[in-house]
Length: 287
Image (cartoon, rainbow, N blue to C red; front, top):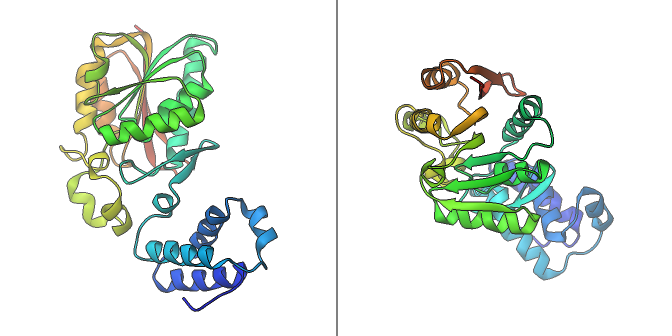
């Protein structure tokens, strides 16, 4: 990077540099905002200021890292989800906006079936950075929330997020429902690994090279976790109960059938996301 003295000069260089390397030019602004610990409006107030040498070199390093493929969220260490800032690193998936729709869909059904004040027992299976369990606890304070993950590193990140956001969560290490066995639950939510291994060739190098494969891929054409949930949940649920899972866009019918086999009387919905792709399956068990 040639010496660009002002913020706007550095941004112009970074935008061009990222575009040349096939990255989104907008990442330059996000990285600069992170560097100056401000939002877009605040950044505009610094736009014609000279950059201290240390800041200039740090910005250059971040831009070059992203140009090589490292996601912006792992460089800044944060991502926004449901109006809150969550910490992330390579031990957890980067939160996706579609998962906000899982939260909204779950709460809509919870209000209908349980009433807004009910003290529910809710489990977030495969919590990752903790976005589902923490958001549900903060949006539904009466819920007793347990969050599980097979990855100790992911669970540690989720604990940090819960502490930072003041969410009282019981975190448990273990595979899928193993840590919540021998208890009864009102709500089960999960965004498990659901990508089939053969789909890797269609994925971005940024995702494949940086996000944890343990949280991305599953056996049985991506259906393994849903099969295990369908097998174990009948013994773990109160009545009524709600199950809500995020799915791959082509898995709707298969996942719905798995839950229908375990809960023949359940009301099962395949729900599309904002992009009109099948993205969630909800099951209401009330028999």
